[in-house]
Image: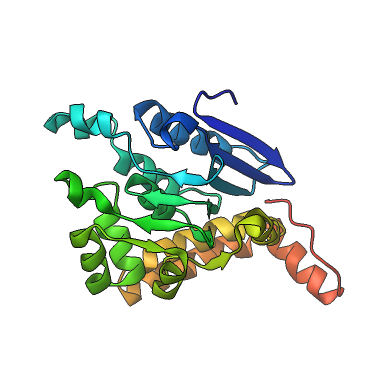
Length: 257
């Protein structure tokens, strides 16, 4: 894949997307959002990819959206290229997505992290939704996803004040799964990514669907969905391999079939 604002590598079933706009501290413009959307869609169709990692170039994850672009946007532009739509596609990605937050994750950068399934930050990471300082609100899913992850009261405080928090407070709030020294960030990320990559791709996909729906579905609907997805998995070769491997006291080799 050849992109202007992204650098993509694939190794051992793990695809790494690196946001690359060093001159803008990886702030996202229309082209970079479009490229990110295209990259995630393509990686979801690649059988050689089981986990997607998103990080930023050098010491910044994503510093936000390109302010000049926001300044020039008109009301109906929100119905053209919408950051919200790109991030919803990441949230619904068939492959698990891990955010490796190596520095500032602000505005759209924080919303990008929120759209990922697992968020791991370096001890130098800073996160926040400072859009209120620009006279706008977080419209890439921030008002919805942040609330679901850290609770309404704290989400209101962060969004209404525009405050930026450090990695340790973010972990305390549940916004980050892990915080590690900067030099060990990718080591921790790949430790988790490799563990997920050894599991059944079909089971991972079905589990993600059920988990994503759990925050909005009522208990009866959620349990019905869970049961139907399990019925699908009962008919897969991966289920047969997983149970057979357990009985034979060996590690399973899942093929995603």
